[in-house]
Length: 329
Image (tube, rainbow, N blue to C red; front, side):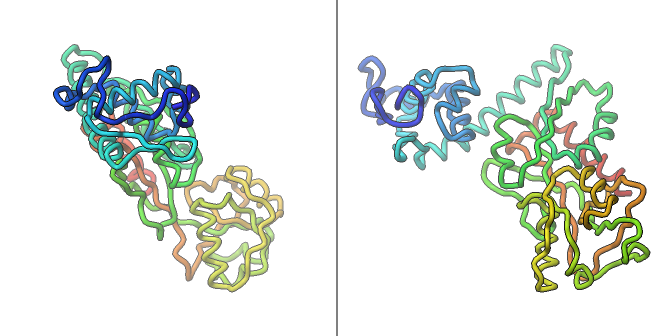
């Protein structure tokens, strides 16, 4: 591996089990795996390059490369292979990452249990959430965690569902959203729990020809100018469904991911918009139910497998489910 961690170089890529450190044969030593080196392997699977792992773990790229080579000797099998100027996990490496998730989850549980025996707080839980979902649920979640011994550290991360696995490199829990017709995120290194369904409505400005209506059909919206979100997010998926029904490609004048900004522009007469029902705050907007199209987004909570066995994470997950029941009641 090069010193920058991006590909083969003077350090080489020899992960083969035929040579041990200092001339030691791996035939008798394979099978003793370092937990800390498993953490480095998992970080590589999450981040994709040695240099990214080095930056995240405050190590040098050459140190990361060396630790991965030692782990390969411990495992007795090659874990990395060349991929152009970079390296990637072998099949054995991918299998070991899944086992590393299990081992590290068990270590985290053991650490938490020992902390409980010492009567110390159960620790921090890092949570990423999309902004409108956070605005809706986070106040209820924080209230539920009062005096629980759990400290929730929240960040807003507005990414499509496909980017959620990358977020789990830095967060314990990720609150994400998807179009209700889309399949939940899945994979051997992700566990997803469905939380709630939120309908998506049409909002129009005061004085609009549809403002006095309760419902609207897609065909009645074919000639409207739209304010929408960026592609890949649930609201945009519904807008594409409207295009399918009407046969007319929607005329999108702006793409903005801040619903409060979209509301202001709609109220000012610059177009109509699709908005999640519980995100609508502007008092002047007229809200119409959309008929003939499945229009809703699903809230999901994503974690690493077995993460709920940590009491602090289980407490946070329960708080989110309770908050969802409260806001949809």
